[in-house]
Length: 387
Image 1 (cartoon, rainbow, N blue to C red):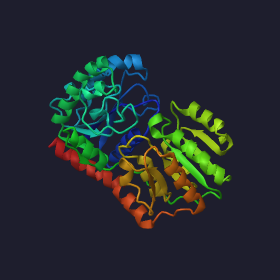
Image 2: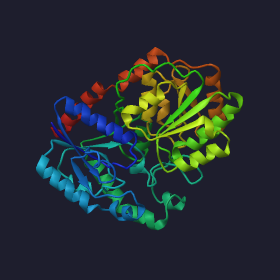
Image 3: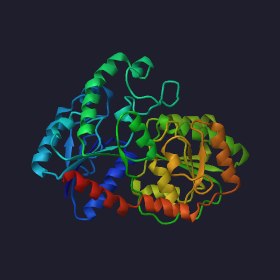
Image 4: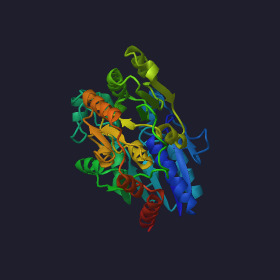
């Protein structure tokens, strides 16, 4: 089949971009012709994208480009003429490419993946100004509750009309977790769950001699990395030989290093920086636990599935997609989102008595997220959509 993937591609890519790349590699290995259209903020430099539209990571240009990105629409029309795909798979376009792309896709067999909250939440996190989770559908509450200014809310009306129209016309809408399926349904969007693929991995190497806790992911506020540093500081008081490793990049990097310094744990926390996806497993392999302390309700949380598939236990937030991956006592510990006390208690418990991941839990994750299974599932979805 000829398959065109569409995805925003940030300059600091995360789990969504990893999933898109893995799907493309899997399908291509099976003989499909897969091409990728992205914005110009991240993928063009490494040659990942076949079609690149002008985009920006800066807020000012995004205000207009998110409403209508004429460069992306023109690039998509050219790609459709040249490539003539059997099906188009839209992964993410709200940040740079704009929902106006759905106008060019009318009449084209389309599958849409909803990877995160942006299609049902203008701020993209479902987190209210007071830090609590928003459980109601988007609407006037978005500006009345203080999440958006009235001008921003009004600007978004045509964006969301185009998005809803695109979802309604799609042959199939899929998402990454039961958690997301339920919250999309509350907003009137019917989606089927297709779990993301996890890279084929071998069992983790021997754990470090001293307690080692590893965070992998974006260094942004909703990921709760500051919470991790504060909880780790409390653990270090009781277990002075413990160490932490932070793998990733993002806007909070400098603030996190400063926080570690103020708490007196700078020498015990290693900020590795962002690593290519194929190298991340090596930084997790010797961990006593991978720590995923998200403050928001993580839509899925690929990093937890990858760690468990490696045989590394996970300490993660209980509300959100992590709860579908982490099995308490078998593959990790779930803590209340935002609870420094619960997180510190979980880390101390593992430092005192290391947790070994149950082999059956590893097998369940590897089976549910296998690259081969994911490729077969998507081929079936594409074939039905094209037909």
